[in-house]
Image (cartoon, rainbow, N blue to C red; front, side, top):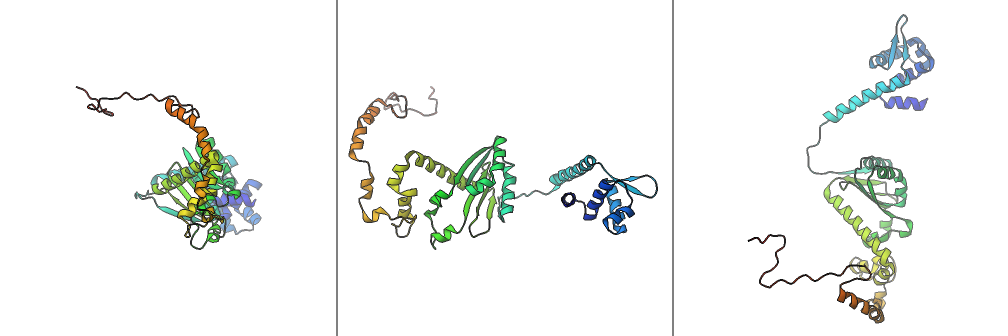
Length: 336
């Protein structure tokens, strides 16, 4: 009963109006005195509410005396409410002033539910593409709306971090107060919908869930560039993981420590940098000479024939040489 009253109030009926409608639907036609007695409400309030409901078309007044009212059938009531709401929504959409500004604002929202509601609403409007960069905890919350988007034909691109990756490459810039402050911040997430609408935020940790929403092109460009870099690095690690780690350290730690860490040698991941104790480290990391010698014949053969055996490419024919006095012209007609 309470849930039914709650939804009737959501549709614009007052508390007493909702109770009258439910009472008449349950007990059948009745006058104001009977309804007021069953509800334990003031007769004057019940009479006034019944008259309002009659004017709105939510109750029918029966002929005869004393005055009695009856409720509409459920399907008739919902059809009446639906038509009224749709008419109001159409008018609001047509008449509400639209912003004439050209600058895309940055909207800040806070709170877990507020962020999730805004995100789900926009995912439901996606038409072409959704680019997602989240942790697994947030991915689990959004699995259903993203699956619905895919079912509509929207392309969904994922980048998903997990606990085993810790903070991954994001610790390259640890913050002046050390890594512990950075780790307290929670899990970052970002979404780009149709390469325009963007959400960037953080959830978990010691801070309240918060996000920034914008359609400013610079944000879309930055987030898409970041996703592209992650995509390329992921593929390189899949294809050349051991080689990259031995040459550049875990998560490219040697490169990061060279440019980011103030000391220039400390590993941002807490590992000792081998270069500090061994200046010949990079030289030793290079493949042995024998490896190059073994590959040399094949490489020379490829160079002579113009064929890459590994890639299976066709030989590239040499372009015909032109007289020095008549340089080739690109994209033009030399006509007489």
